[in-house]
Amino acid sequence: MSRIRDPEVHVRRQQPPGGGGPPGGAEPPGGAGASGRAGASGRAGRPRLRAGAAAFTSLTALAATTLVTGPAVGVPSAVPCALSRTSAHHSLGLDTWNGSYPRPGGALDAVMIFLSFPDAEPLTGPAELAADHFPGTSEYFERASYGRFTLRPHPRDVWTPMPRESGAYGIRRDWDTGKRAMYLRDAVAAADASVDFSRYDIVYLVADPDAPGVDSDATKVVNLERPLEADGTEIKRVVTVFERHPPDRNVLAHETGHVFDLPDLYHRPEDGRGDWDTHVGDWDVMGSQFGLAPDLLGWHKWKLGWLSRAQVTCVRGAGPEVVSLEPADAPRGPGGTLGTRLAVVRTGRDSALAIEARSDAGNDAGTCTEGVLVYRVRSGTASGDGPVEVVDAHPGTEACGDRSVYPPLADAPLEEGETFTVPDTGVRIEVTGRTASDVWTVRITPGKAD
Image (cartoon, rainbow, N blue to C red; front, top):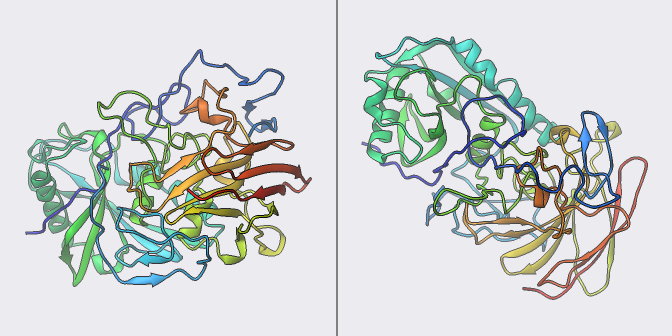
């Protein structure tokens, strides 16, 4: 019998008002947007909102205590500003790769298995449920990786019958581990006769969303301390999908990010109430699947190998350094070129400041602000505990109150002509220009370490 540990407990809540995406269930950490906040403009005289393509340039789970160990693989892009990987769950250190996770380079194959139950007749077919997630999820990663990673889905075209009624598994957001283990064993055993698990890198188990015992809040990644075995291969983790039809926006991109060792960036209030998006707001799908700018942060792209040493500038020394930043969310340039996308200032043994430009390109096409985003990274902080915190360059204002998951951070980026000194670091950031081709010129002066 396999033992299952639970580092990916995702508590879900309702999507933010005006936040977009299909109606229905909610997946954490979609934030609670507030109507009646600062309104369309967070700062007098400065346009803050986008309307479709017409955009204004403006200011722009419970974590496991130990890591599932695997062979350490060096990250070729490591530079002096690359933090070391620690034992924190989903550590954002990137000097080595945790080999127990698949690394998203080239192409990976994912099987999508649809599970039915004896107490319900499915109302939606497998093909329609597969279309809820693909090709959208593959396109998300294609854009985020600059074409360096392809997620190839292999959805089954039939239902796989489960041996027990849906209520027998006690499916819910904080799931009993014993019943969850029973669910996984039953699902793999039921599918094994028709699925060759050795052919796939990722397993998605999709439950009939209309079965009475299925709770849409229970979608999560389950890591297996002792892997299940099928077809001569070990199944180390499974994405369990319980989404309603249609599903939450970007839900599978968020969960698949965990398969690649990315952490939850949202803040989970102890009582389950209050703001969940105080750490990163709209700025990464691992913080909120409902975010207006849900592309992965440049640090995540560096960790995953989509940015190399050539695209990361490590700012060191006492004097200022001028860096030209292409937006981290923009596709490759003419001829497939990729310039500097991330600047990093080391602030401590396991901490750094990351600086990147964000625009309305790629996965961030729905953003309402553009500019130079600054955020803190801590490699010793576990998933869900705040390993990334966006620095709010305009702490007294808000923006996009009708759509943002967390309006106080919607205007966090710096725009052209602005200067900001990051509290507790002394690091000074000046945005001195922006070219017609959308390259941002940033003058960075390192300060004291943490």
